[in-house]
Length: 134
Image (cartoon, rainbow, N blue to C red; front, side, top):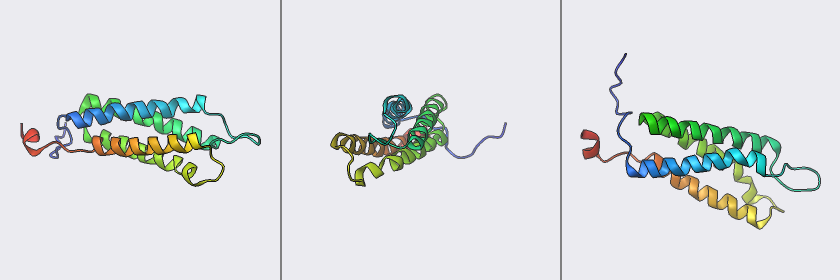
């Protein structure tokens, strides 16, 4: 097997682990939203079905990447977690700017956006140099 000279497999810090737990919870919420959130039709407002499907897929990707990162301590998995969270946030941003969106939906999207930014920062935090040298 070829040995990778980069430090992709450094131990996870407490910040990384907290970020991964939060990312896993957000990913699970994205996955079950497909079954909970009403689909947009002519009478009710809701996200388009394509957005629900995309969020469900991004949720599954997040959960798989969280498990992979936790088990292998490979930073590539944390990058996948961050990327899937970024795409999930982007898919929800139109709710903040469209007219007629209920206030509770705007609040939920804002909270999930802030949580996702925190998750991305925690997951991508590098260990301190002295911790990596051990």
